Structure formats: structure tokens, C-alpha cells
Image 1: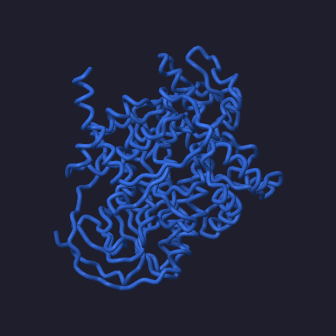
Image 2: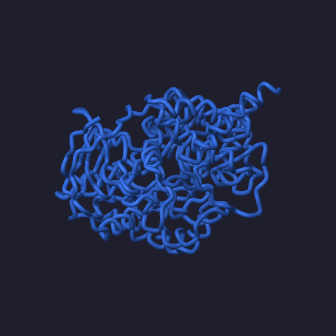
Image 3: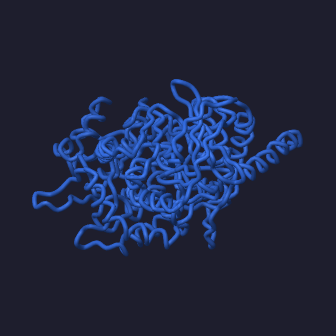
Length: 515
């Protein structure tokens, strides 16, 4: 179909308005940029739901080297050491940059930053804002800064649907809003679209976080890295609300313990206990639930009546669910929370497609490896946004507005595939359920429907999970419970994933007939 072409003068287009997208736009000022938000600014982004903070070695007894060691340990052999070292060294300055943009971080009475402790950190290095509402404060301040910046053109309720590629390079972004489909000619596009939690039934992410940035990159031909690694947060508030409210890891950092319905602490003998890496804690909770038991987070002894003061937002979420966390244990269960894999990018955030960058959760920088260290996500978005902006500014661009013709897919809707994804790609995986998921998702991905883009993203993740025949970090295979001696990265494109899925689907009827 022919599209209405908006001449933006060759300005870069940033797709996504969470922390990564907003900071990239702010770092590019005064260069003109166009920022796309698929909802009203400040709504619908994962960033604003973040209760935890930003990890940075700003304490007197801390150092970037200690932060590096903790990150590498959590990443279970798959972190890129150079990326980790560069990120942790840049983290303290990113905190100062955020303050310049207007973020009010929590401080002690003496004026020093108030630092929290979270799982697998050896020191208190978690910087918070507004107590347990760090994400909301970050987004509030960055939106205010973006609205004050004349060089940033914000298009709200406009969703990117496709990237137009010519001769291996980006030439336009196709988007859709209330007035129809438009084309934004540009040689520079940045994906800052967040994660994939919305593909799962139990998730802390907004339902719209269903991997649309990955779908855009996939259809453009980009390469992906480590898609199989999906982190499940161990302590989402159990109940019907979606997204599931998060009971921050910081609550366990203050001493809260996980207990079964008999009040027994089942992580007592686990190294690190409740502050073991997230994959360890999530699997332990999952095993309790699989045995038919309920799981609770008990903060009565460590916080009691101080819970409201320390965690006001969580306390309110609990009250809305009919729970008083000061006097009652909080029912919890694991929920899909963060995607360590994503668009494969280099040190500047460049993808394998000329003119396409990725930043934040949609990108795979090598920082997180197989299992993200708590509170390394927001700091990654803040740090890498400056690297992406610097790289973008150094690239020359040609202004070539012209009429584009392109297929404009429907608005993505993952609701119909969530049961499939949840069954195939949960905390414990195996070959049979992964193969079943692939053969079910393939025809959905191949047709033009609202579920097609989410299905192709889920399909790629399932193929990556099938290929990794070991258990490492957040990826646990019950049929391959051992960890390979040699760590290997995984790489995938949509084309290779489809080829594998077609081969599996072609063999599936034969296998059934022979059985």
C-alpha cells in the first residue's frame, strides 16, 4: 500500500519512549530527533514499573571491579567482559547525568546516596528514587526534560510497524497512529522498545511488551543473540492483576524470607539464600508451586510496621490485594520479567543492519550473559544510550524523502499465543514442549494476523532454546540439566529460525505416525 510520507529532514527516529529511548534523544540534543511512543508518553513502558534501582559503585567500600565480578558471576559464563567493564566504570557518571536531567535520587540525612542491597550483589550499590518507585521517577524526570528540549519531536500513540530496508540499509520507518499509516524517511533508526514479557501469561511487563522491536529487527534481516535467556522474577504478587505487581528484590535485601504455606523457609540451605541469583530463586519457588504448595514472602520480622515507610508503593499494592505486609506474609510466584537476549549489537549499539541501532532491553550487548544481575538493566539503558547517541551523531545521512510502498501489519496482540509461550518457554523447559511450541507458532507467524509478529518473536526464542542443549543461567532444560564446560553464545536470524521450524514441523507428523 502507498503511505503518507512525512519529511523529517533525515532526522534519526527513536522507537520507544522508556529510559533508553528518552535518554538517547536527550543525549542527541541539539540534533533534531523524532521519538515514537506507542502509547501516551509515560504510559505503557516497562521502565516506569521498575521498583528496583540502578546498580552503580558509588559507595565508599565499593568499586567498579567488585561490580564487574558480581555481574560476571550472575551471567554464568556468557557475559562479554569488555562490555561489562566499560558499563560498570560508566555507571557512576550515568547516575550524575540522570541527576542533571532532573532525577531526584534518595539520599540519607547526611546527603549521601541511600544505597540498597539486592540479590547476588556483594555490596550495597542500588541507587533508588522515590523509595520503591524508581522507574516512575526516572520516566517522570526524563519526560519533563524531553518536553523542554526543542530538538525532540515526540509522536505519541504512534507505533512502528516495519522498517524499510534497501540494499541492506534502513531507509524509512513505517508507523501507524490514529490518522493511519505513515512513512518516516530516515537513514538512522534506534530500537528502544523494551522486552517480551507480554508474551507470557504471568508477567511483570505491560501486555504491549510483546517483542515488537525484535519483530521489526527480524523482518529487516537483523541478527539476534542469546534469545533463549528469559529472566523470571521470583517474587511477583500472586493474583489476577496483569501485569503482575512486583515485590521488589529490595524487600529480600532488607531481610525478608521465602516460606511455604507451613511457614518453612525452603532456601535456608541454598548458598546466598533469598539473595541467590534470580534463576536459582525462581526455580526454587517454581518447584514449591509444582508440588502444590503456596509460597510467601515474609517481611514481618525484618520490617514489620516499617514496611510502609520503606516500601510505600509495594505496601499499597499489597493493600489493594487485601494483604497487610506488616502483619501478613505476601503470596508470590515467579513471572516473566526481563529478556537478556535481543538484537545483537556492537560496542556502539549498532546492529547487523546498516542504519539500525538498538538500546536497552531490546538489545543484547553482552552485559547480562545468561542471567541479569539485579538492577543492571536500568543502568545499562542509561549508560548505553550515550554510546548510541554518540555513534548516531557520527554517521552522515542523506535526505531522500520519497513515496514508500510497504505492507503494514496489524497492531500486535499476543493474547492468543500466551498459553503456548507460557507452556513452552517457562522456567523449566524440555525438547517435547519446545517442539510442540514451534510447530504451533509457525503457522501463526506465517499468516497476517494481530498475533503474527508476537508469534514470530516467540518462535525465534523457542528455536534458540531448542538449540541450547544445556542448562545455564535462566535457561533450564530438564532433559539437559548439566552445564557445558565451554560457554557458547547463540546467534540467530529470522530466516534461519524459520528454516529450522519448517524442518521440525515437516518431521512432526512422521514422528507421530510412527509412534
